[in-house]
Length: 298
Image (cartoon, rainbow, N blue to C red):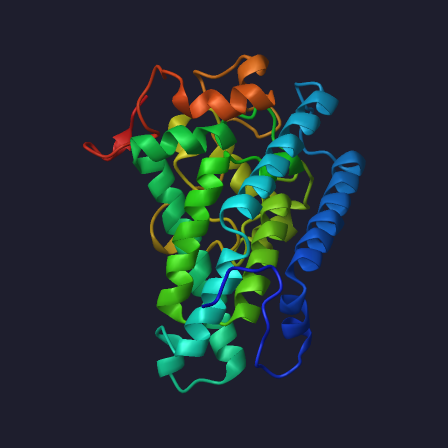
């Protein structure tokens, strides 16, 4: 019986990626701390917007919810993604083992397929009322900066983990590829939520491949049709290919309103207790996307 663990053993060649996978907790913590420090410094040196809420209080509570997420996952499903990948790999499960492809190609296919999974999950979180209740915790942030990228309700984190494990088993993804994807996704979430300036020409070039802060900030607009666009977290292809791409907001981004129309009280939106109970409170509006009409429910 293979139990979930943070340090699975690998019967694989020793490579830098495999070495990272052998020490997942250190890899995750190192990536988080390094990218967070870089983005925080960048935000201070070249902010894109003036923050409206007290930064210290927001940061304390946004970081408190990621600490809550981490504790809950470690208690309920420790090391689940890597354990699933190891289990599937040893039993030859999934689509990728059936394809006679070089290891680098399988790695790239794994990263792209898991990124598409995250995109589709994100659309689902906006379209299904019960799931929108969880995801609105992320959107109710009254400002937009690096800490927004780690602000998710614990139940959404658990749901995301279960969906990811199912995708990993279906693909037959290797443990090393899974950890690399997790590190990239974690880093890109902090980057895309950064309150940072990018030169316009560089942003235009980057967003043909990657989601940039300027592109993702559209998704956090108060306007519901803008909220329901640009669902990608890492690769920008899916929004372009599947018709959810929006180049810019109607209002200039340095003046647009961030957050949700029905959630403007900082005591509800930017305090840990308010974030944790938000999915269970009565809301004035339905889900972000009205599936019966295909339009925003505003």
